[in-house]
Length: 486
Image 1 (tube, rainbow, N blue to C red):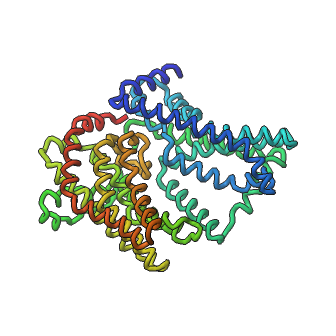
Image 2 (cartoon, rainbow, N blue to C red; image 1 turned 60 degrees about the horizontal axis):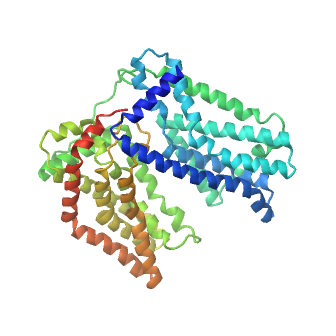
Image 3 (spheres, rainbow, N blue to C red; image 1 turned 90 degrees about the vertical axis):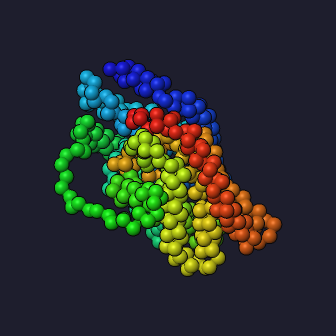
């Protein structure tokens, strides 16, 4: 049975319309995996001696920061780790038992790079500890507990990606703990360090993570087994009907029609609503940089771009994938691409303007800080808005509007062209700002970044012509890609 599943997975990979791009990406990811593997091995071997040289007790120091290590690991998983259980629908029409399908889907995650890469750090580190005289049994118990916690993160990632309320709770908890630690309001490591140290010092304590892992696997298994139906989610729901009076947008013609469609899409669907939440989260991104005197001043423009451009990054990068469910229908209506692209651009501009106004509370840090955010907004409107629209021509991943997961980005949406177009969004303003600081002062640095945004706005029509041409060239490959739901 397992051989059949593996055979079907291989066929799905080789028969994909984007097989060439997927293969190239797999090769690129392979090199990245080798690179990070070597880094982890080096860190695992050298961590003990580096901490010793700093007059720190290695195991106690590692245990002190394990909580944030696992939180960071979980965040990275939510951003990047694929969820195999999303590909089970095609199997439901085949003569496979539901428990077998779920066990196979969950079992695939055990072999994920995000699980075994940790072994490249913790195993060498544990070997060094044993060679340096630490108790062998204690280290083995500690290592078993650590790997149990790693796999707990694996299944938490699956659960958080599918249960929206838990995802929101986790994000709030992570931000709260990180903020409290950063501003020295509350240090949770005082309570967690004794537990992690106890995994080594106290026999039997390592069983707690193992039991939690078993319970979490059973919960995840039952959750997906109970929801493993083709018509899951189609049960009758009673709700108060709501309508939006957006007639006033009709005065803008085709542009108004597209804007009405986008506003309704954002208000009515889980995934698009999540972009609003994430845009609000981006508003507080500047607190990390503007409130930290140890950060390089050049990073201030980085914060300014993210504070004002939250909606641009979480919504704009998936144009036109937001319309993937009816994109084929749109293409049969002789809809002008220029009007379609312009409506998306105006939506991004309006959201950027609103974010900049709301971010006025940064005036508490001084007018120069808020001016940096305003300059970031100008660059977002003049340059980054064009780049995300151009990148959308190469992002051929359909979006499930009913699924709130993947708000930060879809792993399948990454490709070489989109990645190259992402570089100027961040590194170009950083470079301009650094050049201004290096050869003159902050005023010149801000003027250079703002000037780039103004130039982008001046040449907007020419840039739109290039974007429109690219969308037309990619039209049929995009339609073909949107047909592939799996």
